[in-house]
Length: 178
Figure 1: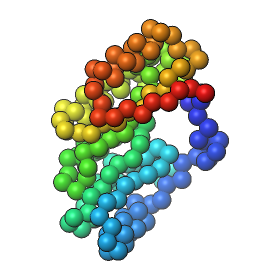
Figure 2: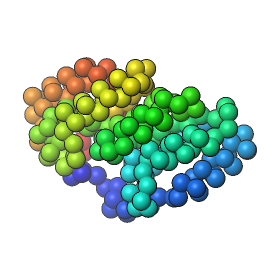
Figure 3: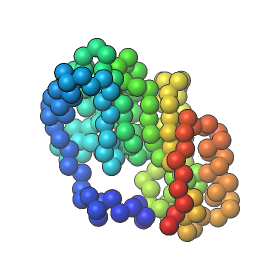
């Protein structure tokens, strides 16, 4: 994105193997951990560098965890969720996976999303939210919004607020553009 320093600061994606993650999660469970959360700069990008994907990881982790251990997803950008939505939904419907997603929209305006160089449209984001909610009606869905992007107009902001009101997210992280 035009505003993000993550790649410059962190470099490209470097995924651990599914086996390494499963082994670490099982070890943590043996040590008494009952809540495992996948955390990264963009959880949905998992595996692009090693020939796998986030849905495969979620399903394998879910299969491997002992009773009483819950799995929670981290933040993922819309394009990654959209590529693997069926597998992600399958995982989120499992009893040992929280029905939770954090998917940042950033803006409800296609013009602003284009200016930000985001790789999705409002219609694609809308389709994703509708798919998730159709499959998992009680999903806890968080999003992020950036306020005051340099090219954002009052009309663009109104579109963002309309989208937020339409979907009544469980939570919205908002930050102003610096």
